[in-house]
Length: 220
Length: 214
Image (tube, rainbow over all chains, first blue to last red; front, side, top):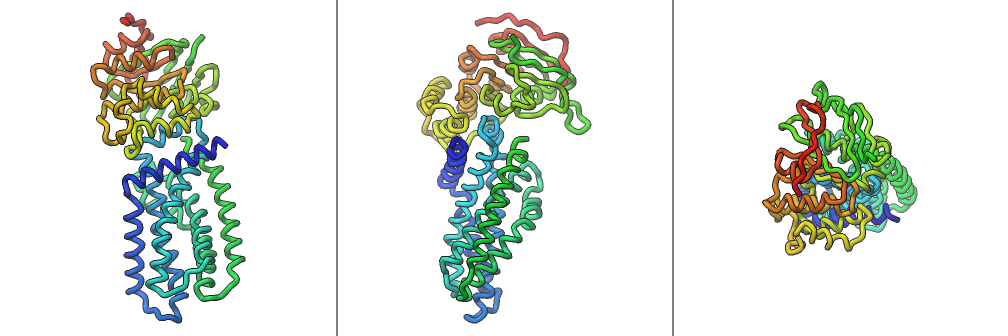
């Protein structure tokens, strides 16, 4: 119970700070729209091949937006020397990590709320429950992995370079499975259940692994 | 009984020896000043004593617990004021303390008590980022005593404090074991019973008993 209240307090603190400073979300939303505009002009697509191109654009934009969102989660703490103050309390590092990942994940979900309708508008693809659920499930796993590596590289000078190098290989399963689910859903075909189930399995696996690793990453 | 017993604490950063076999014993309720020039190893020593850093070698026992193993248990009994205040600039002074109350497992009522203790009640609603450096330091000191720690480790807390700062430090150190790093010998003389001088990571001479002027 105490770990849950700590995680919620950390997430609330991060979301309150973002709400008051508006440092990240407006910039990310702007990036998302600009990336879609560029993709809209860059690809030759029509109503037949749009469902094949749009999922690729969706995941590319999501990956880059995620790298920025998760990278900031710990970089800001290190810059203001507040991470040490948090770790100097008896709070479990896993709870602190969970709160950070929850807040970063929610900020990415806000960007997805801009990304998905804009994608449907620019590419003329349908937005269904299957598309939204695949993106949200992938966000969970991406958030925990992204935040773990962001915590790891936060004290390194070349963190902007290291974060993608470490994170992207582990995000590939989410891209592959999520991409399949979104492509199937946008193509009007059913049967995304297996991909959704696999995304859920990946989420559980990485949430457990990152929670165990958080202690070693954060505590020293 | 000794509250802190350090045996041959050594800290290396690469080839640099920041702390060289420091032995130390501090009694419960005692106030110790750590003096020395810049780069003498004061911050390194204090970070180890606050369990914020692990030494390369040596033993550290705090309140009878091995500080290398029982770090999380000990952190509930230690208050640490580091060089940087480490506050959340977008949150108000009261919100900063309330957040750390949750992390420390302290009662919310402590927020008002601590704001009063450090003299920030009037500006409790102001964002921490908009406070003066001195007020931020007061808030950091307040955060360190939020959970009523038995051991207080203060790394140059007087650096940004105004003329009332010494009174504030005396108030928060009262009834606690305290270790304070400072360049101000007069402050050390006023607040502490003993002082220890570091030079190039080594303790110079034996810890000196200070004349306490309360």
